[in-house]
Length: 288
Image (cartoon, rainbow, N blue to C red; front, side, top):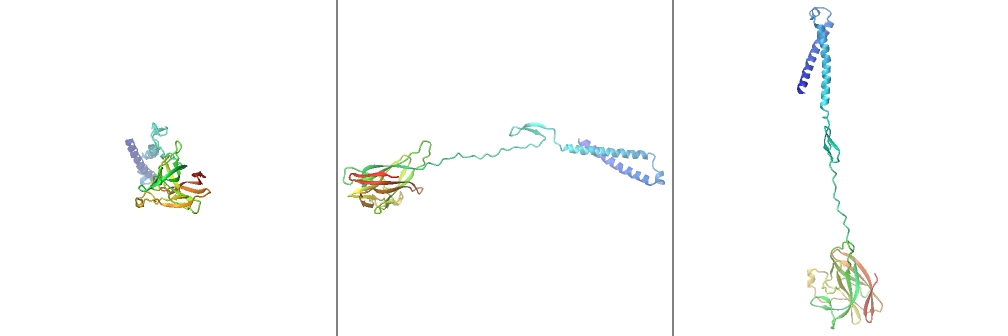
């Protein structure tokens, strides 16, 4: 192919030179009607003119063939199937081959259901308690003079239903707010058998809250002097802290209990109770 291209190029050059020379001579012969140039023209000059015409025709044919060959050189080769693309369509050589990159797929995390709200169930239970000075807490007791008739509430953290997330342990402080202005409120109530004002609840755990005791015809609530489980609380003198008190009323005494999560600093739940005083003791009715 390269040799043929070079041969055609040489023929084109010869044809061009011959065409120029013979054309010039022909023009001179036409202009000069007689004279020395006319006399000395060779007898084969008509043949040279014919050769000039043939060379011009040949030059045109060769030029057209060269242009067609050049145009064919840029065309793709005969198509040939060489495989399939990502979508199963056949790929053909000699044509543009496009690579279909798969679209990036973003990983979608499965939805996580939020934990169900924490709730508590409360039940009244009768009890007698006494204050243990060495431990700095109230404990169950019976059979000696230091025992006091107490109003206790069993607090149970509800267990979530099957398949529900219950969350971790919560640190709870009980805040008592009485409806009587004489009683006021208790910012940190005592938990039975605990020196601290905080009780930790996992699902299903049970703790007992001390609402108050009866002492000499008085209803007395106690406030825990400790503010939490911090190290500085160890220096608090472990004596019971006398809270608000009131003569045993003849009408129900209302109290609102807030269960406060001191870790998240939110109120988990609130309950309203009515304390009813009788000659035999105290009872509680849950309002809400």
